[in-house]
Image (cartoon, rainbow, N blue to C red):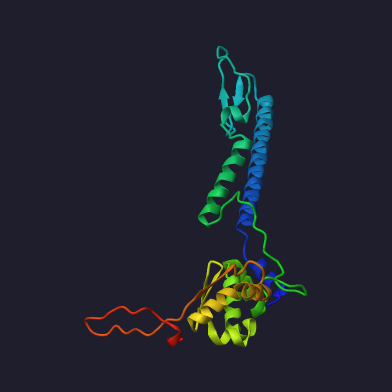
Length: 250
């Protein structure tokens, strides 16, 4: 799906913040119209009252409904007031505030949240001519990143050297020496006989040099040579421990 297909779909969804703002604007416009209508009504009543009082005979004044009232001479006639003195009208600010509160309440009933910042649509381009982290990656680069992240590079490199043991140390040593395991920069090897175990201990510096050239300096810091494991003669309930493996069993 392209970004052109995504844009119309994103525009069709109603924006809660925009709807709330539109409702608030309509409420404010209604409040302004109500205030203007109240002022016009007040001016109309004041003009009508002044005209009726001017045309009425002395001692007679008119009421708001147009009827005449006779005022005695001993009654003190109060000066004419405004519509606001007779009818208590709310101020324009109060009308606007009440309309705004009604608009916010209506927006909350529709599930909107007035006052929240408008969320922009995400039009981030996820593909293009350049490389992206979401693009398919090569298996080799992915495995290298995984080994580097988990700290398995040394173990994997030593495992590769053990798999190519004959190529690394040569045929003669490989025929009489077998690597067993690698731990804490120490490579444990097993000799085929005690004579070869002694010989390999003398060849340890050469083995370290070859391993450093193959794996890098410091990967294998020590080579521990172990002698052969002889057959066990412990049979039955009563047995005597032997002298251990000798060259005879190598």
